[in-house]
Length: 119
Image (cartoon, one colour):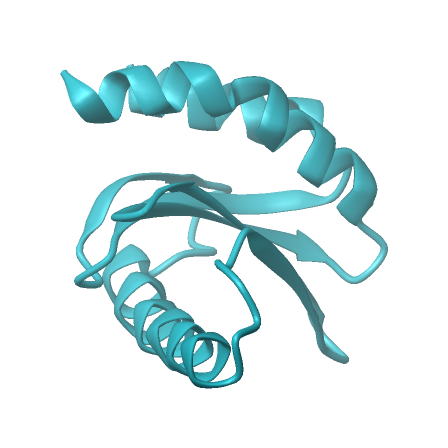
């Protein structure tokens, strides 16, 4: 079921290249991408480290709970949305991709993803 949801997200978001559901320990639960674009294991592990670092900073500064973020680079964009305290979704977009649309579609799919995570 994860794969179907991720494929739908990629089809619905202009410029989307890959999407991964990641456990907090950095293990990818499932992933979908355009051919040859993705090393799910590497992306999941590295972004999980980044998420944990952000969570530590937020905890030390009373910044609240991490809900999500957008990372912009000269090569593209990454959108992260937390699904549960233990899982998050990453989506990679080309530099002209629409992060607002990505966040909207991820939030629309969130309840389906959360249901799959608790089964």
